[in-house]
Length: 512
Image 1 (cartoon, rainbow, N blue to C red):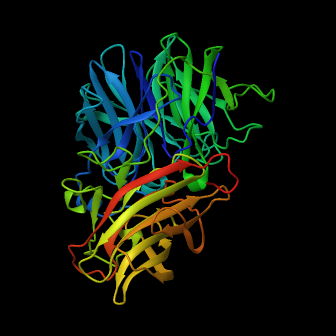
Image 2 (image 1 turned 120 degrees about the vertical axis):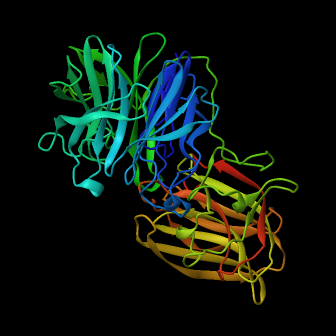
Image 3 (image 1 turned 30 degrees about the vertical axis):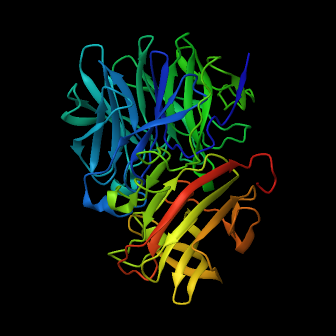
């Protein structure tokens, strides 16, 4: 019997929810200001995953044409009902939205179910009598409530709510910061699985009742215990074809966000039991390894490296705001051209850049190398590689008044929410005669990263100091490629990125 190791994804797929359709598993995750949003992942064994789609191409508000850090798509849920995939998506400032598709690989259509501020973490549920409901939580930052779950009847086609919400659980004393509810029916009980106690220090709880509106009983079913898995936080329950039960959830590891774990689950005296009882307290604790749910299945991997030779951008990439075709070009040339755009509203800093092209790191340590040619049209045009977070840095090939230079910029975010505020400085620079360069970023095991460059990819020269890895707002740090005009003037220049190659650095103390 093969064993898997947790986490199954050392990557920031925050707030996961999972379903099974036939032999296939589908998982969704939140993505906040990064778009296209709500990645849809696919697996045949719950261990190996690939990205197959995004449920949200863009958000229908001008606000999201610029970065809106900490806003955007929060914790989603996914269900398959009568031939349609339904993905419920909360926008904490705008309301509850629903993305639907008959085909998980096809286009999802987005519509608003209900306008509201502070409603989050919605999950639909179709009862055996044909009625449909939505259970949801509240965002303390938007409405001052963080410990209550409400239930509201909805149209079975998920077009609108019916009536007013009713409170089915108030955890102010026993389960503060209750959120992320997922609703199920099994063995004569309605179950709601939910995390409580906060992202980094909380636990996994279950509510159960004989009627959909309660009254509900409460029980803690998994906590950190004696393990190193802090949290463990919200996720979803799924039943395999062989009848075994599994639970996907996340762990917050700070700098790299919320990584994904898979736990065995069973029932004991009518209650879910998740993980194993390792310290004798009768409560489950996360497992470090377990038997693979289904052997002999494809060992999918999430793409990282990119030759930029397709007709569309790879699914691993997201922009820092609504995507725009004016940001890039793929046709008729090598690689991808990212245009040296000005920022029309404020300084041209990375934290403010809607046209920063980002991806989620997939391991603790890695080396990323991109080959880029700067086709400058105005002084200040630059092309770069970097890491986005509350402390960030990027290495750019930039056109200056004295010619081309390699420029290492460092930024500090001083206001972390929505448009936010940041400061940027030029840490160091070095003249560079050519227009093509290999830029390298190495993420190390000590949670720092460093930059170097090469004219020919045979030997690299370090530049600047090591930089501290730092999370972004509600997400882990993001790897990015970005072209801009640092003088903030209009330009037709671009950086032409021929490729990015990313190698896993696991097992090396310093990285690769």
